Image (cartoon, rainbow, N blue to C red; front, side):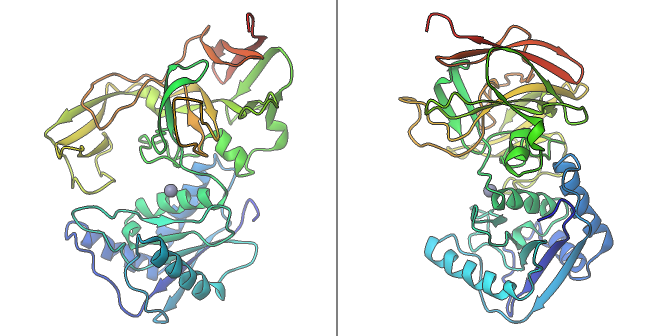
Length: 388
Ligand SMILES: [Zn+2]
């Protein structure tokens, strides 16, 4: 797929459509549906712009088209059951096959709700089987303005080999030990579920995995010394990779936009602002809301907004530190952030800032320290680990 491929939305309108069971969202869905079937130019431009913004203009679709496939399929609601959903996926991929445009980005939009879509959950708006080469699939749960674009970008990421983006909160962040992992809780990536307001982007390491950062913008740390990280609008390295080749996962360092550095987070219990079953809120200050494990309502809000900032970020893929986390996850954990706990009611402020002198990461070979930050550059110092 080229960096200005056409986005071909294959809209499958089945013989019989399941009605959404939540009346609160139906009008928006209906309006969106007519925009999609009518290939509304504003909607198509919005899909195009969303890809461009998410990739810092590294992937700007030439244009976006809708290919309608009507009345050919009796498929029913989108199942969560692994066997049923695999069978449905095969049907969808087979149906879409004849409408795929070779070399372009083909995305299936199936006009069916998830089976469990009601007050008790079932909110999955799409899926893609990682590295399968299949078309990403977006369902009618995402048939709302903004949500659709976000879901398409997210599923495109899966198609490019990205898993969900998480956070690791570690007692010792530098050595990444004693960590609690949340596999979908990276507010700085659209591959997480808790994406911050205005963060709708892939992280730099994710862009590298998607092939959207040039080879000469990724620098492998080969020996002790000073290394400079640049933000996306500057010449030079965007990602430093520490790879000791000693059966440890590579660690990614980047210096990039961090919208969560621009507000504090405040959670209030016994309160919802919008539909508590809706993962997405129309209120830009709502970071998350819903019910916790015991059914108590909560809403978490962005407060004390400040100008946008960059932050140094550290990510580790396939991260599975011994003794602290059971299941290895193939996500890029953001290991240095303070704990982010939207489902509890701790009004802990989150600044996302890391000060000069902070040890970013340490293993038996190297210690990586933040030396300085100035505008669009961050300098890190790589030293041999002493006393190891
Ligand atoms: Zn996903």
